[in-house]
Length: 246
Image 1: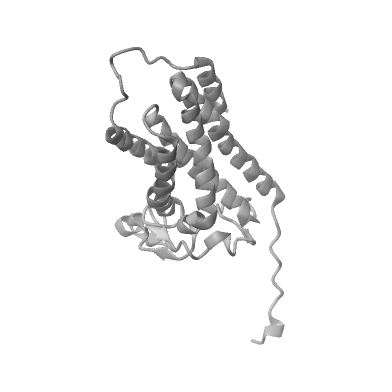
Image 2: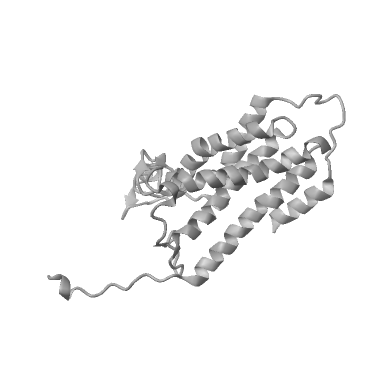
């Protein structure tokens, strides 16, 4: 069959409703971190530590945002899988090749969106996951130390987990994942599909275990048990909790 006889393929078009919806979702997740989580944690800490506590959330947004753009997105959602643990961080280095359209979720009725919108959406989850850990080390870690930890942890823990669960790695429904190896697969998809409820594995379990490990490593606050360590401002915590709830 010659090329001339093939039907012309329709150019993909943007689903504006889906795009707008994802922008709103990304904005809400970011709103949970700054100022939501910053107020929530800041209000529960002592007065002398409130600025440090709140800046941990803001700092996480800054450092994770930069890392995600440089190599994080490629490491989590690139197409070149490496052992089911990570994707090639150099494939989409600096968001190269992300100027097209994608249909990342595949739900019926959910159309194409700009890939950069998907990048921004996933970025907000990386940010809040790192920021969640900071509550476990209130009053005990310098801001500069936290910033170094945030960059290392998101690289060594978050991006691999995001790839394994959401990016087609070992913990996903992909044909090469653990579920497919144990239960079998059909048409390139595991017969028993792992379900990550509300990001529970990538975000909450991941951050919770990191917070536990970090708290054990850092140890107790100076003066713990010798005097009152009252929250700085409970109304701030209430406002932060309300923003997180929204």
